[in-house]
Length: 143
View 1 (tube, rainbow, N blue to C red):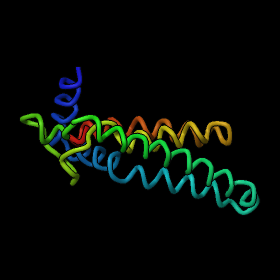
View 2 (cartoon, helix red, strand yellow):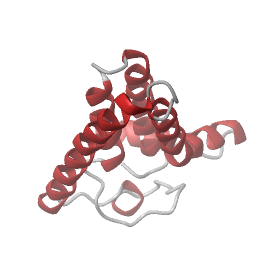
View 3 (cartoon, rainbow, N blue to C red):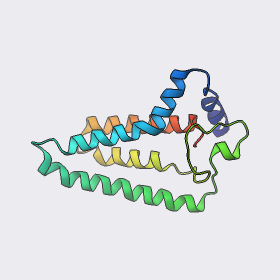
View 4 (cartoon, helix red, strand yellow):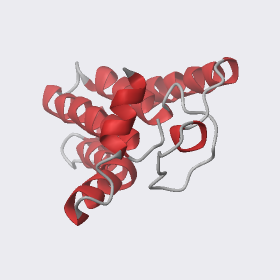
């Protein structure tokens, strides 16, 4: 199933400039957009004093999750699909190893979960963004 998903999504490359742009946006730009939304939420003038400590806790939780994911990468030998599978094109620059677990998905899923009790709207946007980032990175040949 993993291979069929990777080949199906990566096979969309070159079919449309729009699809290529969406894949690159989802895998490279959307993470910055989502972090900008979280920072804007944090530094709203009226709520800043309350939200800065919340942001620190949320960010800490996400960074711990990424640290665990990076530790797990040490135990899983998972080269990126553009290295390990013939016919997969890597659309963005990245190191050839460390495909699993995805630090991007880990970070944004943990961030969304930690934000859930603080702001369900932002949390929902982060969860949706994490899914889009995940599929975009698969389509880009990274996972």
